[in-house]
Picture 1 (spheres, one colour):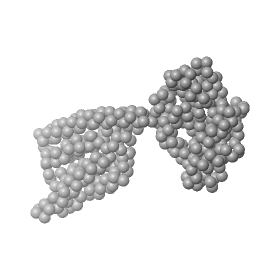
Picture 2 (cartoon, one colour):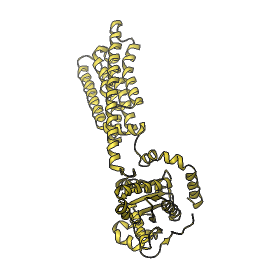
Picture 3 (tube, one colour):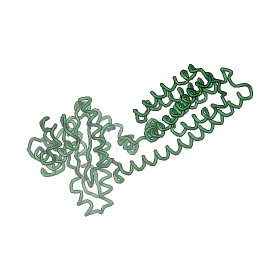
Picture 4 (cartoon, rainbow, N blue to C red):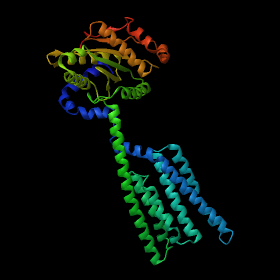
Length: 416
């Protein structure tokens, strides 16, 4: 991203600042990717219920195999062996669907595999009734158990609706084939209506239970990931998001820069005006940081008065300009007749470098900014790529040497 593009985004953000300020809380939630949509709940439910789904599919396949083997044994007595062979055919797609469901560990493919399994099971039961001459009443328990069994584990509307429709397809096929006599036909319809209705009630209760668990886990996750004072992601969450962002920018060949931000002489604010005033100052700084960044950027509180911002698709020079504009905005704040200032260290990721290494270099550049008098922006030197590739074995001292080597740019007077 060029400097002109970044400046254009900043001007655009300044024009929309009142609206963005009102949406600050909602945008924070989006930044940390709090799952709130139907797809996220579907993935959550599929992941939680995947073992139960696979266990039910395995049990159903075992029961069907026992049914076919029973047909084979009865075939020796007087039934045709061709009927046994035709009845065994649905077991093959059922087995394939079971393998897919086990291998995918939840998700859309596992759900589709479950629907294919149900369709094959229904087809097998219909073949059994037609070829073996078994009355529908003999297979009624199996037809009724299918929707009841899968209703607690197929929770999304479309997959449960598909399973319910497939469950009713088998008895309807027998009715259309004229297999049950008049009175038995109505009994079959009534039994399937009761089974499907009961499965709908079971599905609704299971759905509400899983949604409640989903909301509770999301709330607990929010408590663990969000700093209560500033409403920004905590340190652990920043590292987690940083690894995702780093993977994405590496894949697209884009730069990534890190801002390490620290409030200058913050202890004096607490000492002179109390911790409540210090908390208000931290919230004000956090708000300025958040309003200075794009929706694609990530900012979190690292502890105390330290903040870290991750700027994807931004090189170190554009990041330094963003940091300088942020520094000036914070300097314009007035808290209890005290001018707040910040120092910022900037570091750009190089190929092969881990996110914690980039943050350490930005931290070392921040220390250099404080050594130079605070209230300024300092850019860390870019390490050579071979060194970055082996950065995991070098640790903090190497980062400190880079930041103190003098190969940095002091951006405290950078143009806006």
